[in-house]
Length: 352
Image (cartoon, rainbow, N blue to C red; front, side, top):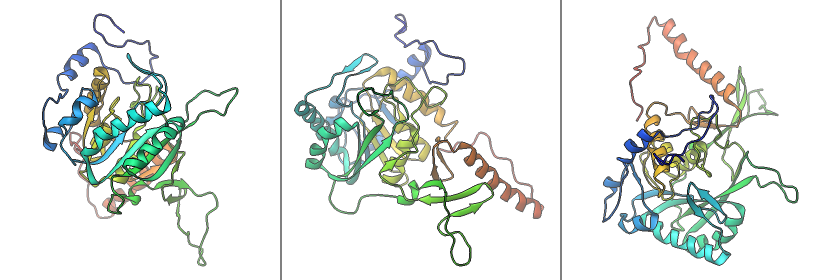
């Protein structure tokens, strides 16, 4: 930490793409933070990054404005969030703390809204009864984390959970299954009696099938130093992971609320996918990272591992590029056959 600027300083390799903010950027982005000290409207919240403690903000939030809440509170373990230290609690104490969080955020959720709650396996034991008391628990997603050190006296801890819950027990909640299908290579393809592909696509670059999303995710990559979405946040979630939640459980233009925003992944994904958003985060530097990432999303709306409306398996970038190139050839060929010269794309056109 630089004592003169109060900005984190770390030596980095030349090819390291981890996002940081300079002292000048910290000063500039800080001017855009929101603060709530009284009742507010949904319109006033839209697109805001609120730099406050959640329990200060929650009384001022409008009722029933959010289609989706992405809830990623501190897990029940020791973690230093750049000076804000969270210490693990006894089971009953953490359950009470988590219940207070739910009581603070659930009034903001629509009657048919969805909540996704992130946790590790130990924390899941504590929060499951609390979730069942207040929500309809639909499923538990378990996703594989690539990072992590091995253990000598235990199995390597390589998973995290996401609890899928809705506010009501009815079936009127949003779940867009076609928006979150996974494109996977077909290892043993089946053909029908005429020899045509059965439930898969045959192409020059391989055989693929769009599969329904399951509650075990093995296609997620944790942000690391060579990825432009990476920050120094100790528990940052990947954009691809959040994109699955947003696309599955919000309509186009829906409103997403993240009460523990961290480095801003939820808001960035919402901006890239055309959803409205608001986030709350008490760490000012994390809020600055969020603001910078939001500004960069205007220039690059891509999400690693998501292309052409589908999610791809991990380590499939070469396949994605090959398919994109094949698709690009089709309109060019048609244009040549019709003697039409395509107009050049406007480089200044904003997608959002």
